[in-house]
Length: 281
Length: 259
Image (tube, rainbow over all chains, first blue to last red; front, side, top):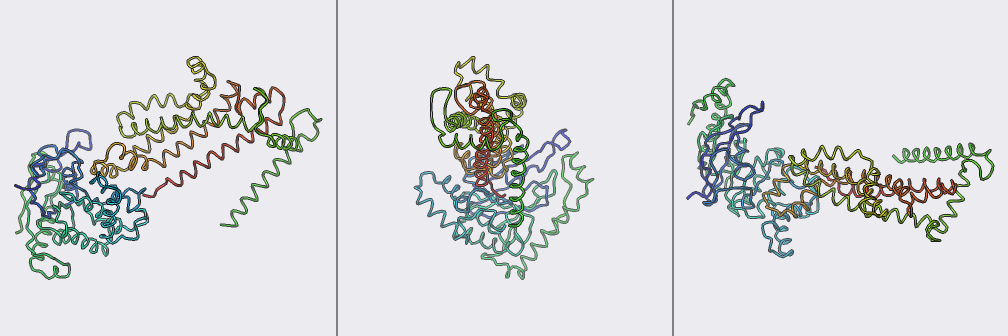
């Protein structure tokens, strides 16, 4: 049995002109095994963040459903922590308190001392020991996302949902935080669903990569397996032939999908069928 | 920076000196006891009143300190009750756009009503003038806080509420860790407007109900033709209003946050 099942999920939004609905994506189905790291890649507007929100329980699917360990997801829950693109740290709380809110929520019965020790452990794990008393506004983007990671991992969720977690971090810091994530994930082995449009990031981190066609009416085109053994480092990756093959495959796919003309989109919207895709593999 | 400040202080002092001089000059020809009292007379009255502010010689003769204390006591009860009510209601309105839009027309109608207009109704229903005055304070400080809280809560970033939902925080914890701190800057801005309008309203309310309080004092001294006391009381009302605002200003700086 798959651990997390995305069961033929479709999502419609009300059309901007107020008449009818627009289908963002249709009939998306795949599963994640326990401890698997799966990344979804696609252009803006393909609904990948919407799908992540549906798994988080923050949005409802129009059709289909999401099943975690045999139980359908009805709403948000602490077993599915989200790491947000814009960090979503409470600006009025310190670094320490931002993590503490999550730990207390995950372990309501713990005495204060145990909560404090646990929070400290995760704050130090992301290298922010000494910055506990700072407010998010005093931190750089990279440091803020470290807090975001600490908050998410500290609750030991069944599923980690990463919503373009590195998109707002400058390129030089990004690699460091990615390594941070790999280190934490290697230790915890949570099941991870990540959304990104950074192909290198997807290959570096994932076990499998799901490719979405462009929206509206986006569909899951294929899921490719990343057969590069772990641990992976950026330095080794650049020369790995499998990495190059995968990267080319995904980039070609994205260009192919991105080249879809607006006319095709209109056809797709009126017929309810996505245009055929050129496969490059 | 330091020079700018010095210049500001100089202009302020200069303005005060000019004002007092013009005031003194305009009353210089008056015979003693006739016409508007000058600054010197008001100063003498102030020294006299402040030298024994808390005496109590019966209902019509109390020290100015006692009068201010009784006004501030009324203000505290009415204002705190109104603030708690307004913040709680505001949270509900802010969290539910539907409720907000349903209630908003009534708030808009109630908001411009002078709080004193309610006085007859309060006097008739509770038959106690002191509590009627407290209720006037309540009405005067309700709407700004209510409107600001609803606005502040409704503009809390969706992400923060999503985090609270994912963490499955209880309603109270959600209120205390996300909603109130998130809306705090707007709430305190409302509280500041409210305390200003409450302080404005209490003088008028006390003129109507009599008995105690600075509003009653002003009216009573007018009846005694003690204009020196009236002028001093006016200045003191302004000064206390500033102190109330400064206190909330400090609170507002403490609760501000940078996104």
